Amino acid sequence: MEQQASQASRRVATSDDVEVSTYLEIAKEKKGQQPLPQEAPKAQGEAVLVIDFGSQYSRLIARRVRECHVYCEIVPYTASWESVSGLNPKGIILSGGPASVYEPGAPLAPTWVYESKLPVLGICYGMQVLALQLGGRVSASARREYGHAVLHQNEVGSPVFAGLPPSVPVWMSHGDQIAELPPGFRALAYTDSSPIAVMGSGSTIGLQFHPEVAHTPQGMDILRNFLYKVCGLSGAWTPQNFVVQAIEGIREQVGDGRVICALSGGVDSAVAATLIHRAVGSQLTCIFVDNGLLRRDEPRRVVELFGRYLGLNLLHVDASRRFLRRLEGVTDPEQKRRAIGEEFIRVFEDEAAELGHVDFLAQGTLYPDVIESQTAENQASAKIKTHHNVGGLPATMHLKLVEPLRYLFKDEVRGAGLALELPEEMVYRQPFPGPGLAIRILGEVTQEKLEVLRACDWIVMDEIKGANLYRELWQSFAVLTDARSVGVMGDYRTYGYVVAVRAVTSQDAMTADWARLPYEVLARISNRIVNEVAQVNRVVYDITSKPPGTIEWE
Ligand code: XMP
Image (tube, rainbow, N blue to C red; front, side, top):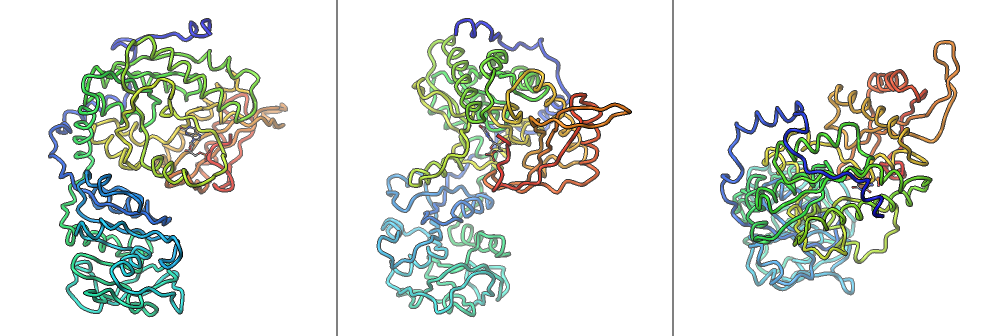
């Protein structure tokens, strides 16, 4: 162990041990042009609560509300008023859900929803909950209604329909419907199958259809009307405001404590570290562990950006030999993942121990992780892969967590990154897995194979960027298979590696489709790899979606 530790050379990045690359120059130029985020206007501190009845669309509702620049959080229907009042809610959305309101144990809205007198928008099941709890009646529809329908308004002037034509296409997905309005409510719109497709009384509104899905083309207008005209919100939640609020929040939480943060080179840890640095400056120390499984040029870029350009306290640990030794003889994908994860924690702990007393560990946890861990508590799901993430760090260190991105979606993290003036190249980076290239090398990981894969990966990236496809793709990369094949070059027989190219489109990595890359781009990638990387003589393209495949090969 000691011997291993001594192999991990350790140094603090200084301003003269690296070159400044082009993208940093561009970022510097931009720096002078924009006001610093600290000077942005203060946020309104307003929020909307999305009460989750288990709909597959709850997350989508939250995303849509945020797209209207209104901060919102998804809360369980069991939440107490005390647990949510601190968010300063100005409106409530009741989500859809799979249940029927008359089923035993069907989830209902907590009484504070009605006692608070806040505007309420019930969507699908949420509308039925409103109807039931406010004294109306819900019944099974004679005809279940799934898919497109046309919504006709009964009267003009309802704020939720402001600016919309009298009839609009909507997306339905329900088996129950409102049979009798609660006292004081009016039917505001109908469809062929639902006589009461929209109901309202003052600022309490129920929609039988789903405004949050793309199949309801004017759905965003309806949501915006609810947020701005019914709730009176101003749509002031912008990345700049988030940055200001987050910095204040971190200062409050951290006080004069010391924070450590593992940097991966990815956008999440970059944004988290930059926010914390803005908040508490030199109280933050970042640790960048080079595990030797990174892309070509990656360590240099990270050190340049964070150490030199952003001026963070950065410990750059070259632990590549230590990781390679640990991976010797390991061929099983899960064993590889575990070995890398464990080694990472050891290196990190060793480094952190040298820093002396530390109070906080910064993590780039995002909102989808939070939502997933909330729902996963109630669900038994099969483990597909052991994810190693630089965020998921040692519980044994007993540090308090600082998680400034805990309530952000990925695109909002990118927005915050831009507001913090991080270089676009960093902000729009495609995700890269914690175990790095090791899970893109089938079989044992060796230095030689890493070099082969790095060369192929570089070509894929170069061509994808050259064809202007980088941002359209969720990920694009090369995989070094453990297969070899026979080829011919000149008049000679060759026997070389088979490399697979993988490019996928995705919203959130939960599902993905293989990208229909133009043939010319594939041809250039294949041509260059076979010509420029001597050990490879065959290139194949992976046309598997997820599911049934996963994005990474291991
Ligand atoms: P899969 O292969 O499960 O990957 O379809 C889904 C997404 O997660 C990334 N990935 C990881 N990210 N640590 C990470 O930080 C990991 O261990 C890990 N494994 C996969 C993968 O690149 C894709 O974006």
